[in-house]
Image 1: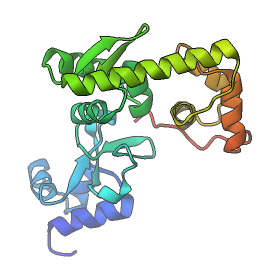
Image 2: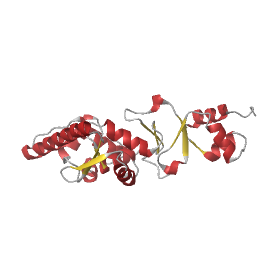
Image 3: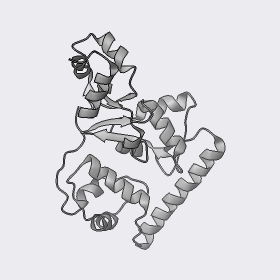
Image 4: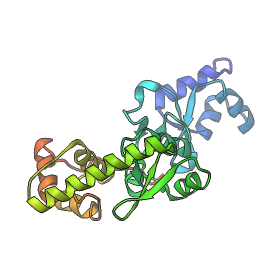
Length: 228
């Protein structure tokens, strides 16, 4: 066996993409928990923000998507490391804030406690907009810009519903694809049901348009998020 070093942890994570602490201890030759963490600390890594943080992966900036997230077999990681830091960054970088429901659909975990703590500590702000609370940047100028864009989006959605016009912008596509990521194999009617209560409303016709645009009608079950 090669001499014990942090490189053994790197090789494990490169081979398996994700690993739990017992895997890391075994790769190091059956060491103690404390010793495993000592070697792990020498590696650029991230712990999963779901699955109770039981999984580890190498911190590779190239693997994250445009929102700084990466999921492997239902185990999710963020470039920020912790869920709280991830939520804070997502809200601050957003051009129109996020609702609790939107963040939960994106991250596949419960976020309400983190949001309430962030508001209580003045890390984030929130405003009630057409029903639900929208979580926003603490800076007043940025917050007002986010609120303006959010209200414009809601007004646009209501106008679409009122006139019957079919508009499918990027925000609608993202919401539909998020449902399909979390519930693979869903049909158009299933997506509409899961998006019930979304503001602005997303109609069956909009969902069908996205299914048609991306050829999703025959998308089969490919395995959704793991229950960990």
